[in-house]
Image 1 (cartoon, rainbow, N blue to C red):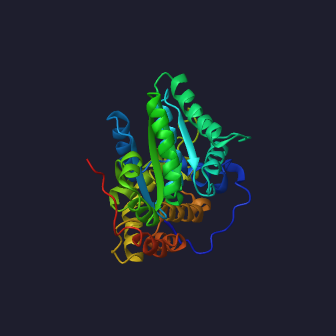
Image 2 (tube, helix red, strand yellow; image 1 turned 120 degrees about the vertical axis):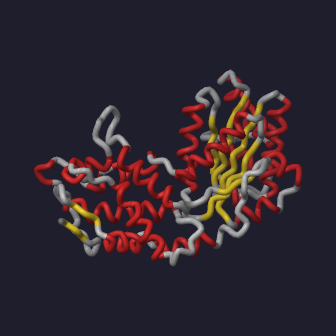
Image 3 (cartoon, rainbow, N blue to C red; image 1 turned 180 degrees about the horizontal axis):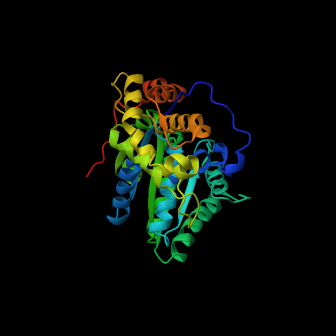
Length: 334
């Protein structure tokens, strides 16, 4: 049997006569956003509750490493799929600070894709309101979803400006649903400083995006890789195109879960409450790449290979960083 180690994998320059896709061009290495995880499913259930119960907002804290940017892209696509008539607007607050009301609305318009934001403060505010109102009314739903990334950078003044927009839309009978995504632990502190009028509008519900913390979570990720279609309408999967010979003989990454989980437990000394999603995927990619050119019907991924892949993914260091963001983890409130 071929039991191989991760140590110094060769770089594949030519896939050979098999016509296999080179690892760095494979969807696992380029399009991991297509995969789902249990934490993402749980969070999207909360978002759907916000949508169907008439709630105005949800503040979502994501400790570093849990995949906030990936989650936002995933949720945006899911909202457009499930609520296709409702427009979804994405706004990134990271580098769009302003010290004046006029400056805020200019930056907001730029964030919405406007090339020009000329005009007085009242005009700019009205243009933002009109943009959101028109989008909601043209959809026939009188609803618009505002997703804010890097919400930990929003100051109280920024929130007051958003409150003005919320109130203006409310007066026009347009429902603004706000989903604020911020990095923990900073977002916990920022949200705690908001006055009640802001909290009620933009943090009506609070929850935290967790990392992968159960063997079932790891099994789910590996199963997704095994079953993800390589291309639309194709019977080939990600795993079958990575390891065609091994796959035909019954190899599945899902069956590697016990070895992978054992390596993760050893790296974190079994004390981790959550594993950072990004680093888990990095370890999987490292292990897959190390074994790509060893594809064979009797291929086996040894425990030592998973241990080295986990080390490459810097799991232990990432877990230590992630745990610092969890002391006041938000649980969904009724």
